[in-house]
Amino acid sequence: AGAAVAVLGGLIGLGGAEFRLPLLIAVFAVFPHRAIRINLLISLATLAISAVVRLGVLQSTNVAAFTTDILGMMLGGIIAAWIGAGLLARIPKERIVVVIAALLLATAALLAAEAFLPGTAWTALAPDSALRVPLAILAGLLVGAISSLLGVAGGEFIIPILILIFGADIRTAGTASVLISIPIVLTGVARHALTGHYRSPSMFQNLILPMVLGSIVGAVIGGYLAALAPTDALRVVLAAILALSAVKLWTKGNAD
Figure 1 (cartoon, rainbow, N blue to C red):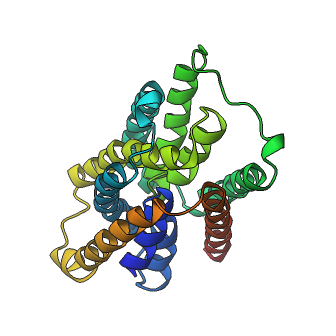
Figure 2: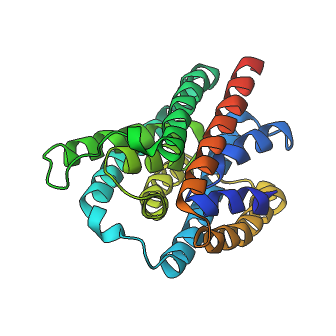
């Protein structure tokens, strides 16, 4: 299960958490709040391997050109992830998933338009625009909050933001997304660890470790496949992933 989820994540530049979360809850019967914390921990391992693979395989990506945007999103994300992880236990998850599902569907529609109607896509910010830094920080705050409250890496939002607002291509956005997600997810994991939520040896041995190992294999495969997939096809795949994630989140929210 971990490998299959990570192949999809590594292919696009996601941690795969948006698929893993419903799996943990529905198949492994993990309580939603605990599933969110476990999901973050598994995503951290997947993202680390995916970053190594993508940086080694996708030599044509221009990540350095977006350094300021990446750092801005990291800063906002770390702040929000730390705060959000502390608030997780106080917020009913079903109140969050409906809003997130709507945002996922809207983003999927925008990316599908990018793939099928490239002439109608809006113009990204100019490289020297004064809005880039504040927007990057605001985007990071959004991603960090979503990451910590839903247990996802946030790539499903980071990638469209990098493409539509900052003008990155799909492969560069995928690699940058992994780099941005790592410190954000690490912050959430650290906050949960400090409050004593990763102390169950049986959970590590029977669930977390097997899924991490499967996720590592899947991330490597997905990272290599990313170098072969055409750009427009990646946009379509990402849009489909977002739409499917929205349906899963919406269904789970209504079921709760």
